[in-house]
Length: 389
Ligand code: GLN
Image (cartoon, rainbow, N blue to C red; front, side):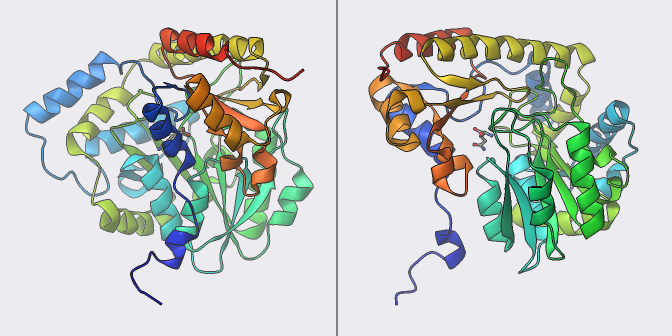
């Protein structure tokens, strides 16, 4: 057999469907409601800070685990919001986006044979993260309409091989915000089985209707077994800057930093300086961000319902999962391709968020991190969609 092939690991997962949908959308000149990135500007103050840093010749490597002003700001803000003391030198590692933060964490803690519990529907990166790090994923289903889990099903997924559980709250793609009760249930299992919680909190500030973001690190007994992952991308509308981070217990930080260092050395130095400025924005910035996204959510839910989609209104993050059974298509991928090619609207097929694609067959995800004009154009195009009665 030829050796001119990809590795076994690399053949076990497919290309990202989310990123593929963006490319397909661009090919067909569609309105891109697939990959979750804003089409409106980032705050002027942080763009100016990035330009100033470049002009001041912050052009060389930052310290591999992150520039001091940014690490200090990350620790300061987490402590201020959630009351948990964080020591930047021992606990904060800046990475190239939360994507690298997640991968570095998984590669730093997983041994072959370890199991990782993953809620599904899941953000599609978690599958390849598990394969590349050598973990065996164990899936636990979040069921619509409330997207909660069955505590017995969760308990049954843990055993003495369980090394970690991945949590994402507010959640992509469902918009679920995990409640304190749910996090307590998860925490009890982590303590019982000596497992680590890896908590992706990238949508921390994008939350609606009085729901509250609770980092699992703040639940009793979890601070020394939680890796919290976050980044600048969603909070400051700079998904292309690729600045993310981990907050980890000191016992895990060394392993995460070594993997991170040899993977990427470090994130863009001038953008880290701007990140420190971003984290210093006043509280009104975050209040306004959430209010603006809530308004956009309501605009898109109204559009989609008018065009006969069944919407699961999200409590957080900037996606809407919908049910497409009423359109009479055989599956979500066929429907998403029809939407982008013939109607001109890019979406993400639901199956890309499930291990067993049959479970996502009747679902499509839309994102609403878009200008009003973009949503209005999607509205006009969706009017051409036919419903089977
Ligand atoms: N989180 C975004 C989404 O789900 C995309 C992130 C990415 O493509 N890196 O659409």
